[in-house]
Amino acid sequence: MVGAVGALLLATRAAPVVGALLFAAVWGSFTTVAQPWMGLQFETLLIESNAVFGASYAFAGVAPWLWVYSMRWLVMRLMLGAGAGKLGGGDPAWRCDGPSAMAFHYLTQPLPNALSRAAHALPGWWHDLETRATFVVEGPLALTFFAASRTLRWVGFAGTAAFNAVIAATGSYGHLHVLTLVDALAVLAEPGACARGAAGDAGSAWTSVRCNSAPPRTALGAAGAVLWWAVGVALAVAYTALTLVPLCANLRGLVQLVQPVPGWRLLEAAAAVAQRWHVCGRYNLFAHMTRVRWELILEGTADGGASWHALGFHEKPGGDAATLDVRPRTLPLGHFLRTDWRAWFLPLAGA
Image (cartoon, rainbow, N blue to C red):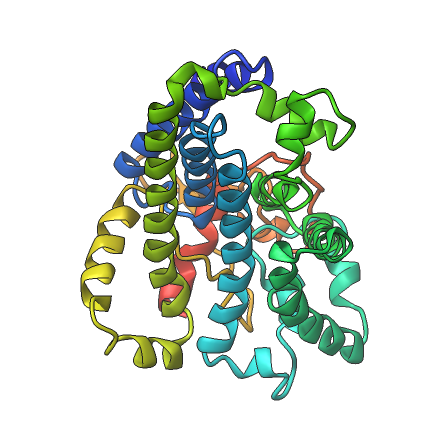
């Protein structure tokens, strides 16, 4: 219900700021009280995306570039954080020391789909190439999100889109990849088109539509506009500084370099508070690869324990012995089976 209301306010441009912040607040509340059930990085990204867009878009009337910068920074941090986590995690599979990480990924991921087995059967040299390509996408390519050249930004966006499309096609990750691509649309936006669009000039229609829906600059008055601009810039600087903490934490060597910096400890404490509100996520997906697929088999009884029967999961293979070799289905894009996903983590603790 909350999601529908927030989406309606955003889609109709009736109150995009209210819609995004409302969704972030309510979903953040759900995530907080439902730990560890909703303790996945997907949830943090969903909350942070709405919170950052809503907070930064509130200043679109006086600083139309602010929401573009904030969303670009978020998606760049998502990609760089994932790459940094893999480098800093120390897993030799990500260094292609022996079988590469992608040689395990398709088999051991939480919810494989109908294409996972075919992807897993690809030759080892292809998996090595995929592993190395991951660091290109989650490294230098992400840096193009802030390039002055629109062509370079298109290259970064296209690479990110292709990367997420492949992962979504060979596994079930709910809204993660759709949300990543929606956030990445800010990479294609031209902040300068806001003023041109407002004046009726030709430019980026996608950008000008959103800028035109912001409060007019003149509605605040000259002094009010300057003050509102200063508040927006201060929030953007604070957000950037806070989110550097989880990004640096993914690279252990980098953390050792920045810790002596004056004020860094204070920044870490502030970031810890922000993380409890799910607006300062540490994104380090698959930093450590699982080599063997462990399947949890749950059993239930209807006769007081005289006999026990395996209970199958809806989609995760291995809910009972009979489904261990059943080929999984491909779920609809964005569909997320939380029970099946969480059950994947349970046997790992004792593996």
